[in-house]
Image: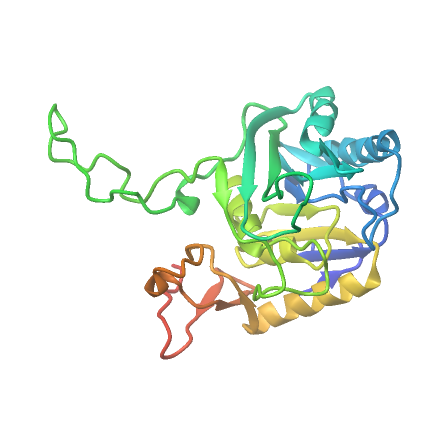
Amino acid sequence: MKISPTFDQASSCVLFHGDCLDLLKQIPDNSIKLIVTSPPYNLGKEYETRLKLNQYISQQKQVIEECVRTLDNTGSICWQVGNYVNNSEIIPLDIVLFPLFASFGLHLRNRIVWQFGHGLHASKRFSGRYEVILWFTKSNNYTFNLDPIRIPQKYPQKKYFKGPRKGELSGNPLGKNPNDIWDIPNVKANHIEKTVHPCQFPIELIERLVLSMTNENDWVLDPFMGVGSTAIAALMHNRKAVGAEIRNEYLVIAKNRIQKALKGELQMRPMERPVYDPNQPAKNIPPKNIKINKSAQPTLLEKPGKYRVEKKK
């Protein structure tokens, strides 16, 4: 697989070292099917400079405007944000940023709540355990594939007990819609995917977006790439990935993780794995290795003696 340092239509993966605005200038209009990212929250993390809130919003507007330009007319933008915190007072960034997206004519399809079990403990308010993904589309004609992301029905054998469909299954046999509240563990100290990045995406979170909002060979863009979780989620499902990262340390880790995935050596939490329940250990499946297949569907590698994973067809 060719990993290009600048945008190249012939490449499957582009990892740009530098400001995302410089990368976005290289990308043609209407060429990206999905833009998914988690921008800095203006909290003064190691990868950002803390700004006044109005400066931060202005900075985000520049990036969002360029993203909208590059977005395909049937494409989606998923902007994952938390809270800006100042003197223990929170400002929800999804509320602050919504008017920017609306000003560019985008359509909000869902405000997805991503809930998780671990994080910083607050002493003067309830500890925050969720963040938000704003899903916008560029038009009313957009890509959305529900079947690849269905989850098990609560009552899979439930049937209609009367009427013309009596005796038939009342739920979709492929599973149900996962709804707009996603319980996915965040990447903290004991997570199998943890790197040095302090605010890392779990790959399975991006997988759900990639599978539902793109088709094979579509481009997926992350303007704040970090350690490459978006690229891995895209490549493992036969999409193309492009992203920018200003810190060389994170870029090196991203490349290394992608190469491990190519060799089937990257451990990650399976998308179908239920959240750990100490009272039901039999339901807790071990991590799996994913191998990116450069010419076809990804191969799910089995770990002998632990569990069986069926290969994708």
